[in-house]
Length: 115
View 1 (cartoon, helix red, strand yellow):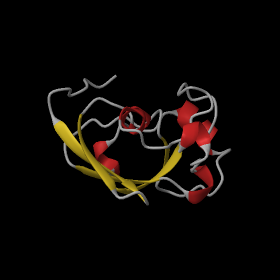
View 2 (cartoon, one colour):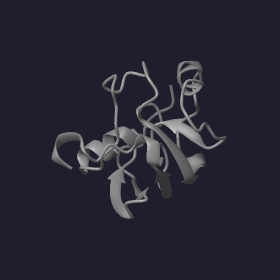
View 3 (tube, one colour):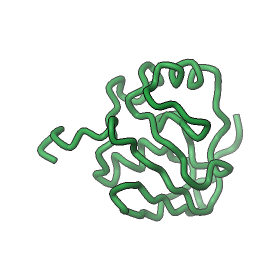
View 4 (cartoon, one colour):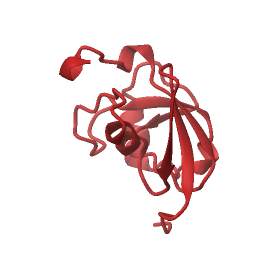
């Protein structure tokens, strides 16, 4: 496993919300979303057992951890799969830089928890 850089900062922008956050590297996209009240579904609790936290990386794919087999297998079940698809729970931000993440329309659950 690669050493995680926890003293460096990355900028994460969530689309279509247009919300941008400066975060420590070493966190997953799902962690960043949850820490900042960004509505990203995660039915399995972030343990790579579903595909509800599927996101599309619009910019900064090179900043993320490599995709492992478990994530690739789960992504096969995701609707609207693209070459830039990742699971938010598995994609760790490992390098500083600018990351742009789209939450697909079919993965947005604004009715959840009073949103």
